[in-house]
Length: 545
Image (cartoon, rainbow, N blue to C red; front, side):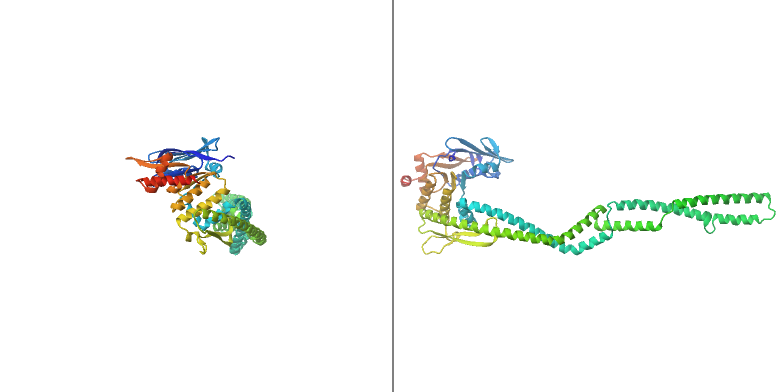
């Protein structure tokens, strides 16, 4: 695969930039300009092309959209990458075809790296030291790390399963007595038919209606025929009294016959009532039994706050939970055995990962020390502080920290406690140089790598950047005249303003303009002849490398 490089960048309506076009080339591209001119905006704009999130605040005031376009070339073919950021949406394009952030990253993560202003701080944080080692030793470490991650995923999944079982067992144990009480209550209720309550309510309605009819028939029968002082008995008394009248007149005879006829009708009606009573006969005990059952079911529905069908389901759930409590111990034992095997495999793989890291770290440390010597460290000595942690994470169980001694006889100490800002820049550059020899990233952008350095040290850093640019395209934003002097191609970022807007412009410098810009970096606004001479000397000295 041919090496890619950025041949052109176009930026519109981004931060203070209205519109700029810069053509980059192979080698070391140096960008300079006054503080606040917008040099770092350029790096921010390039980063915005690949950043998954769009910072809408960077859209230039009084405009609707910011556009950043990068043209990559391999010397034969060009590829255009574009990012459009508006206040309502953001889009990415590869050769005018819309792509996702993921797709863009897949294609260009291995082509471009941006070293930001604050990245020097990363080297001071021990949490980042393992990732530095892993990047350097990727070829040997990554296969072991991938295997470890597989073991770790299996271990975490098994641990989660076991924890869920233990939690389930604990919940069952805590509720076991209560669940058994509930199950006993529901078992005693002999629930099986989810519609039993509805059927009982219907039968109760019928029974209660039958009761009313039977009561009416019985009361009528008693009143007419069977009961004390019934109509039939009273009529018999009346008939007997009239029959005892001697020599009854036709008038009494007619009355007697009428009463006898009425009694006969009552007897006939009583026979009908007797037949109806047999037809509508019911069992009071059955009514009471069904009323009791209805009350029991209503009580259960109110108590468990669910319909009868769900109570029956709940009863089965209780039974299953109580039954499962007898099986869960065996399942826990099986899971514990499986987890122990997975942990053993995890520990073994973690040890292999640790060994691979330490072996890679030895080589890395040696190479960094060599680079530091070239970066004006007299007697750099880097050692590793390594601890195997009892807790395993997705990154293994290593705790690794670089320790450094910059003077003979000085005990190695954590980087943050011993190195200055300028030293941090050089240590980070040394690490970058070593790792970049391994990684095949063709385009590197350094945003103010010169923080905290000047003079001879800055010249050494410039030389190192020039070395890197021999087989990679380097774009470096700097304040340092010593670094700027090493530029194969130099660009000036300047800022101007009118009553309503601020403008950032970019210009490629010719050799004379490069000398003047370096002289300005040396002497400030007012350039002297001595500044010009010094600038020319810097450039001439750089040519020797």
